[in-house]
Amino acid sequence: MHPTKIYVLSGFLGAGKTSVVRHMLCSMPDLLGTVVMVNEFGQLGIDGQLLERPGLNLYQLVNGCICCLLEHDLLITLGRVLETQKPQRILLEASGVADAANLRRSLGDSSLQDKAQIAKIVTVLDARMWERRAALGKLFLSQLAQADQIVLNKIDLIAPDKTAVLEAALRAHFPQAQVVSTVNGEVPTAFFWREAANNFTPAPFSVGFGQNQEPGFVACHLQSSSSISRDAFTAFWSSPPTGLLRSKGQVLFTDGSRHFFDWVDGQLDWHDPLDSIKGTYLALIGSGMDADAAQKQLDSLLSVS
Ligand SMILES: [Zn+2]
Image 1: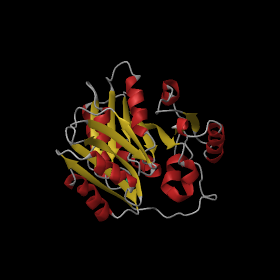
Image 2: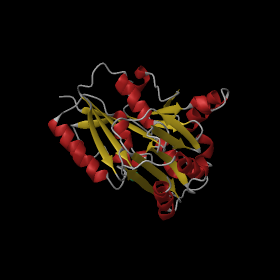
Image 3: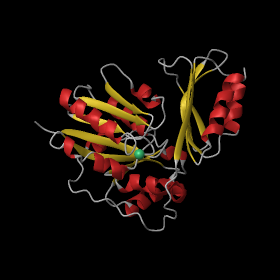
């Protein structure tokens, strides 16, 4: 019996991990033998809803991060899945605030020995974020330093001549990782499934990266069957809460239309709505964000109509 291979998707908030998982699932002839586990720092399990499809074995770990608070839950869930299903592979999407070094350690836990092993850690990087690495801190860099593969995503959002420069910088800083550039998380399947080398050595990332302080992340959310006004929503995004890093969700507007949205790095994008969400469903994650004030600002969306 071969041990189950665990493919870990790591990467900072909004990097596009779910897009990569979606792309990989679409490219598979069938989903037999595959289990997907999705971890979200927030409460709502939005990424899980984005991945949902017939025949998919999906587990969600929400309201915390599997590298720290939910480490125990992760090991219990993995143990159960390995015991009852013995899948060939598990795609494990970590939360955007998970430290990949902790994940590598947890997944080497003795309780999993012989039953499962890390196939690789794939770290997804939003191409626009590299320039802000000093401000994003140690966690952001650890995700890259622990990567067997780095997916440099969203290159359509940077100047065309920047891509090669960025790839070179990543290869210099993280020589342990293979690097591929993508748009919309569309990683070439052969690249993704390629076996990683056996003896992994993380890259050192001490040089010139400024602060070592771990930012404290906070999440808040709004979930309601009510609709909200388009004007209130627009006003919210014209002055989002200070410290906000990432938001996503679905809104039901007062005109009855529903829209899925994504907010990363000051940019709001619209997508087709998910049928499974009827009302309004909105999650925020920030660091150094005043959670109470942000929650008030969210709740006020419902009072204006
Ligand atoms: Zn964690």
